[in-house]
Length: 126
Image (cartoon, rainbow, N blue to C red; front, side, top):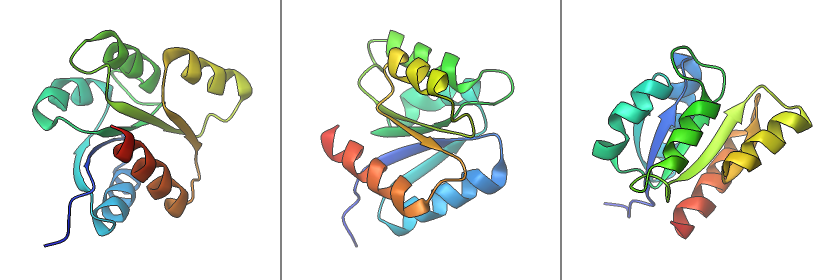
């Protein structure tokens, strides 16, 4: 049995993207759980106890910005590494993410190898 590199919670309302990220991370040795939107993420994060969360920005119910802010605002989730994965590539969007305190920002369409590298780096630091 290969060593597990860490646990990742993949949050995206698009099932195809959610599965793409999950499969790629699984193949690299990460334990992966998924959530369909920000509210689902917040409902499950304490049970899943992820090292890293990949978070889409544009989602129904609760978007990635609000989800990241809530994660950062809670003592028991503020340490979790967060990667925003979004089609929103404007400088203002990046600044907003950094202002919230996210650990990394990837734009769609993303390179799966780059995503894996970012998640691997963040999991090693958590």
